Structure formats: C-alpha cells, structure tokens
Amino acid sequence: MRRLIGRREISPLELLDACIARIERLNPGLNAIAATDFERARAAAREAGSRVMQGAPLPLLHGLPLGVKDLQDTAGLLSTSGNVGMRHRVPAADTALVARLRASGAIVTAKTNVPDMGAGANTRNPVWGATGNPFDNRLNAGGSSGGSAAALAADLLPLCTGSDTGGSLRIPAALCGVVGLRPSPGLIANDHRALGWSALSVLGPMGRDVADTALLMEASVGAHPLDPISRDTPAGAFWPLPEVDPAGLRIGVVEDFGVCAVDTDIRETFRDRVARLGRLVHRCEPVDLGLSDDAHRAFDILRAEAFVAAYADVLRTAPDTLGPNVRANLEMATGFTLADRAWAHLEQTRIARRFAQALSQFDLIVAPVTPVSPFAWTELYATQVEGRTMRNYYEWLSLTYVVTLATAPALSLPCGVDGRGMPFGLQLIAPLNADVRLLAAAHALEQAFENDPALRRPRPDAERLAVPSPALKSIVTHPPGGDAGAAAWAVQNAV
Image (cartoon, rainbow, N blue to C red; front, top):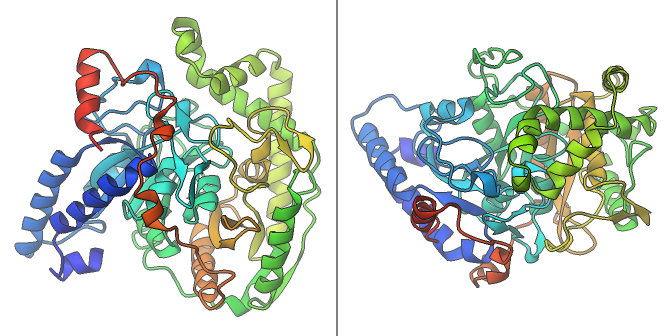
C-alpha cells in the first residue's frame, strides 16, 4: 500500500475510504473498533495526497491508516481504556508512540477495543462490549490487544498498535492469525508507564504479516526523554529486514517450559508443527530451561506491583470504576512484602539468565503461544487448562508471561490452524536485543510456511462477519459519558 501511494497508483484518501467502508460493513459483526476519527482522518489523508502530488519527500508510513489500541492516548479522540470511569475521556495530547507514528505519516483512523484497563486476555468491557474472533465471532479474540488483532485479521486496517505485559500482543495475534511482536524493553518509548524503570510492560507493533510488523516497528523505535529506559536505534535497523536462510536456523523447542498447563489438542498441534518445522531448518531439538513453579509466583508479585503503581489512587478515589480483574491484582498485592518483591526480582534475573544461556546455543526458541483454542467470549477467562484449575484470571497466559519474565523479545507467528480449525500461533523467542534477528528469522519462516497449506497463515471468511452481532455489545451498560460523552460516542462510534 505504501509503495502504491508513493507511485501515485492509489491516493491516501482512496485507501482510507476503502478501510472505512470495510469497517462499516464488517465491524458490526466483529466489534474490533471502538472510537473512530473518520473526518479528521479524511482531512489528514487529503493533506497526505497533496504532499504526494507535490513530489515532496514522504515519510515511512505516509498515508497508511492506523488503528491505535485504546490504552494509548490519542489527541482529540476518545481514549477510554474500556473503563466506565474513563468513558468520556478525550486526551489533549498523543502518547509518545502515537505522536511518533503520526510524524512518520500514519493516519490515526480508529481506536481498537481492549479489556477493561487492559487486564486480561479476553477483549470485553462495559463501555464498548466484546470483540469477537474473526474466524468465529462467538469466540474470543484474545487480549489485551484483541481489537487490533481482530481488525488486522479482517483487513479493516493495515497496521495497528499493541502493548504487552503477560502476552497481550502475542495471544490475540495467535488467536486471530496475525503477527504480534513483544520487543525488547526500551526499543519503543513509553512515556505513560507508571514504573518508568520497569521492563515488564512494553509497547509493540502488530501486522498481518512479518514485513508489515517490521515496517511499523521501524517507525516506532527511538528514545524519548520521559522514558528512562528508552534508547536510540539506528535508522533502517528494522526496514528493510536482512535476508535469512531458514535452512541455517538452529531451533530449540519447548512445549510447556516445564511449568505451564497446555491442553492435549494444542500439544498435538504444536508437535505436528515442530515436525514440519524440523524439515525446514538446520537443527530443531528440545531445550530444558530448568524453570520451576517459582516463575508463577514471581510474575504474580511483579504484576501486582505494577497494578498498585498504576491503580492504587483509583482504588482510593473511585473503587466502583475498577473491574474485577484489576481489583484481583490489587487485592493480591496486599499479601506481599518488601522481601517478596526483592525475591521476585531475583527470580526474574535467574529466569532471564537461563533463557540467555539457552539462546547462546540456538538462534530461536519455539513454543506455543496459548494453551487452549479460543473459547467463548462470554467466559471471562479460561478457568481450566489440561484439567487443572487456574489460580487466577491470568494463569492460563503462563506460556507468554514466562517469556515476559525473561525480558526476551518474542513474536507470535501464524502457523495454520489447530484441531478445531482456529488459528494457531508459534511463539518465536530470541535473545534480549536481538529483535532484528527475530523479525528476519520469522520472515524467512513465514515465506517457507507459504509452501505448506498446514503452515501458512489462515484467512477468515469476511462474509460471515458481514452479519451484525448485537450480542457483542450486550455487556455495554451505557454510552461512554453523560451529555457530551454520549454525543461524542454517537459521532465517533457511528458504525
């Protein structure tokens, strides 16, 4: 699309109008889109078209419509985080990432749906409702970047942003059949992270394939004065990607990290994919990371710490606005001590070093992304996996949050469908700060997968989504805001 714009074969306005038409036709059956900004986007597209016709230099994302995850502030556009207490909130300024993408030529077109405050991996909230999976809208799209993943899978938008603490980029990408990258901490600046020095939560790109994801990553990276761990990245580091021969890749394989519950059918699908992958690469063999159940407790403590930093004031001033998932983390935090916090950081360091040692022997470690096939969006979370009752609303995400503890970059790569015919994703894990190598290897594997129908990226049936699904908005209790908020909602969510 970007090349077509640069060659004047399509105008930014034509591309935007095509995206808007598709959103209006398919989103009622998907509910991936929250607030929209169509009129301002059209004005930006006209300006972008004028710049093309003038022969002016064009930035990397010039004229490309962008979906922004509703946890990220957008100037003049509703940014609710799916929370009733923020249902009429319209920020005056963009978050640093959104500002950087606008400067790169992207046209902010819409916000994408999230769980309430981004807590959990089922995208549903009392403001916008639930997002259905593009392959079966009765099932969940994952989260917390579920709206972005579903919008990409249904071709509503070419690029979307996401974020990831325990798997929020990787899980919805896997369940919807697109690509989500959790980058190394500090590559993408986050000026709104409550704990400025924490590496637990990162912002990241999502795309329909690896090349699109790398393009968005190139436009996203760089230092910002309000993010103390952010750093500069050389221009051109992520785009274009270097070429990699998959036949030379050394792959370490781990099915459950020794500590994660995984349903039998997902294990069978993963083993089938590993067998097929083994025929494409130099070496593909099991790797033991030596993890224990301490990984779960360490994540509990570090996650609770982050939630206290972000929401303790809200708990004191407006507790009724907090959803059950956020409250669960805050309540958990009351049982932890300073000694627990110190222990958790020590355990995270041990885990990171075990991953680093293993990755010195391999180019990538490959694991499943999720332990279950998509379940009904009416179920808040997976309560049981492999016959085991989950301790809380996020333990079923342990395949991804174990990798979060390692601080390693990880990418969810579409890899056919599971035994129920739903998208299946491989989690590709690289050494810390080897993000370019990770994307390049993923791109090589993606191209090789195209030759095998069992491995290539699945595509949803768009016509099934063309039928509106009122049930997806059934948990909405009211429009976001009083008089002014309701008016803004009516205008910006007209679809």
